[in-house]
Image (tube, rainbow, N blue to C red; front, side):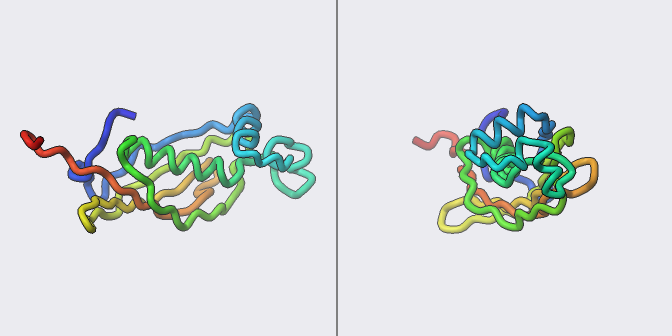
Length: 149
């Protein structure tokens, strides 16, 4: 994270920096433990294959966290993620894949003295779009006025 972005700095149509997440066994096991999703499909390849999946795969909370990381890196710690919608898993994100989260600014607006930004966001792996596309809405602080107390 490079610092706080202010609402005035946001450009409609701007692409966010891609966040990439290599899916190793270690990372899937740690994610499953961290979000307490102990279903073996997320950390046991043989079990996942027995259910018809190609291999162990990332769970929803881990994938949603990837989306949050991409937007959080853009909005900074002073921004607040208000809404996520359109999160749909299309294909598996399995061990050995690298998930690339991509986003762009759709629009920005002000409402009741808050600066809102809407993002289009999606995840891709080698097979194509794996999650989304969806939307996220965040609020960002306004830039301080020079000389204001």
